[in-house]
Length: 95
Picture (cartoon, rainbow, N blue to C red):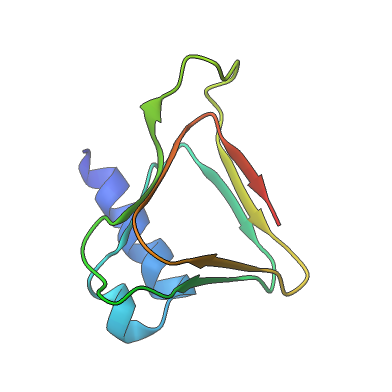
């Protein structure tokens, strides 16, 4: 993990999560992931929240043709995660 990824993840968490969850930095997101969250929300509905339980854009998956990752939540959409999650490099999530 690079320092720029940690800073990007920290800023992302502080912006899109409640402060009690954000200070634990539960989402590790690569700086290469494009994010567009227009009035959208990420909800972590897990019994315990801990560091890097959700990752975006790290592990390579050979079946995906592109290494570009995208996370877009628009029009008051919500991404609810109930536990650990790994979104490999190249995934595109549009809500």
